Amino acid sequence: MAHALAVESPHVTADVIEVAEFPELAQRYHVQGVPKTIINEQVSVDGAVPESRLLALVLDAVGRGHAP
Amino acid sequence: MPVLTDQVRAQVSKVFSERLDAPVTLQLFTQRASPLGAPALPCETCQDTEALLREVAALSAHITLAVRDFVADESVALRLGVDRIPAMVFQGRNKGVMRYFGVPAGYEFSVLVEGLIDAARGETALSAATRERVAALASPIQIRVLVTPT
Image 1 (cartoon, rainbow over the protein chains, first blue to last red):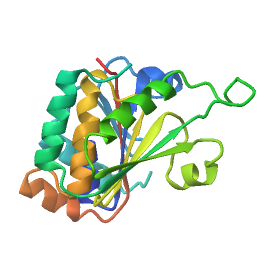
Image 2: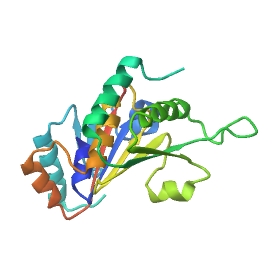
Image 3: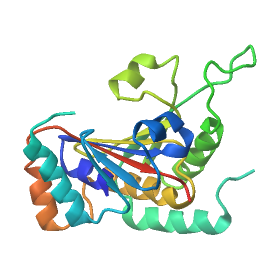
C-alpha cells in the first residue's frame, strides 16, 4: 500500500523494511508488533492500515507541516 | 538449488505475463564476496535475497536486475537513499521512491511482485479518490512500513 502511494506521487518515499533483519530499527521505533507504519517520523500506527486510513494519516502528516 | 518452488514460479510467471507489460529495473544493493574471504559488511540475507531476485527477474523479460555492491557503489547507494543491505530500489514509471530493505520472503514476497508490476505500469489499484488526493500532495512524505516475513 505504501509503495502504491509512491507510484502515484513524486513527493512520496516509501520504504518497506523487514525489521527482523535490522534490530536497530526495531529498537528505534519501539516495534512490538508488525506491521507498523511510520509517517514522516512523527505519526506511528500499529497493525494493518487500510487505504482510507493511510491516506488520512498522510494528509494529517502534511497538515502538521513537517518534512522528514 | 532453486529458491522458488515450481508452483510459485508458475503462478508468478502467469501474473507477470498478464500484468507486467512495461520495463522495470530492480537495483539490488548487496555485498560481494571478498577475495580475502570475509565480506566487508555482515549481511546474513544478502545471498538469499540475490538468489531470490535472480529467479524472479528471470520470469519476465520486462524486469532488469542490476546487482550492485553496497561498498563499491556507495555513491549510487547514497543517491538512492540506501543505507543498509540487502536493499532494492524499484525503478519504472513510479513517480516517487519505492524501496525494500531485507529479503522479501514469506508473506512479503507479494510486496516484491506487486511492487514490480505497479512500478512498471506506473499505476495502482488505489481508488480514484485516493489517487487524486495523493497526486495533489505538495510536500515530502516519508512512509516506513516495518514488517516481518511471516
